Length: 215
Ligand SMILES: *[C@@H]1O[C@H](CO)[C@@H](O)[C@H](O)[C@H]1NC(C)=O
Ligand SMILES: *[C@@H]1O[C@H](CO)[C@@H](O)[C@H](O)[C@H]1NC(C)=O
Image (cartoon, rainbow, N blue to C red; front, top):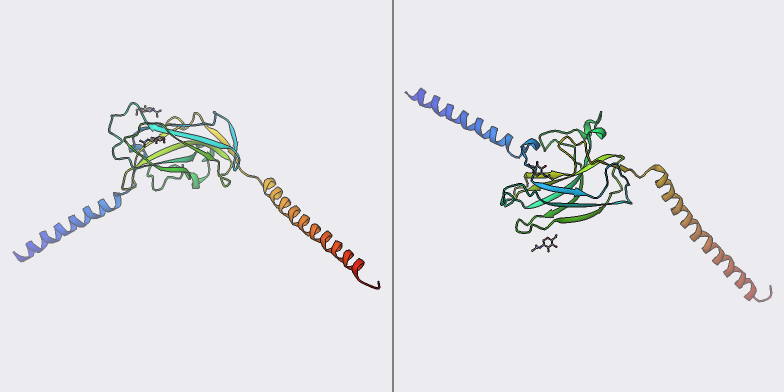
């Protein structure tokens, strides 16, 4: 009698533990394939355009996709627009790999902007961004995620098609030549400051000599 009560209590405990673990593990693991394409996203680069990191600008816009049910954005709290690797720039690079589990996905590593989302405002939202200086050379598209108040992805939109094969642009990284040019200009400035102060000192010495009596 007592044993069977213990058994069922244990069984219950085990089931509860199992459920807890299951919920615990599945919590927060959002899968990209489960997200609706609920945002319309545009970016200014033309297909195939080459942009220079640290120099060129990208203008990004997003707005609720006109085909989704009205009110489906009521839980949206923020939107983040990101720069994402196209498949051609992911080949043989595990550190850029696409994973359906968004906590492991490395497709979109570069944040362009994060902004609050106001469901009452249906105006197209716009942001202009200078391509950051640390963006590597590659082929990219832009994706925006909508997040709820728990910080979970609840929708997305992107400038490319679902296969990430259309409307891609390229970024050219800041090269070593640029960096050596930067160093050269720093050295040149240092040199001009030194030579200027050299002239100044020489000039001072001359005037001292001229002023010094009996020389
Ligand atoms: C809007 O949503 C529909 C349905 O999910 C989708 O087929 C379409 O591609 C979306 N439009 C844009 C611009 O993302
Ligand atoms: C709606 O969004 C636009 C674009 O960001 C902004 O200029 C405007 O002030 C917003 N309106 C409201 C009522 O928040």
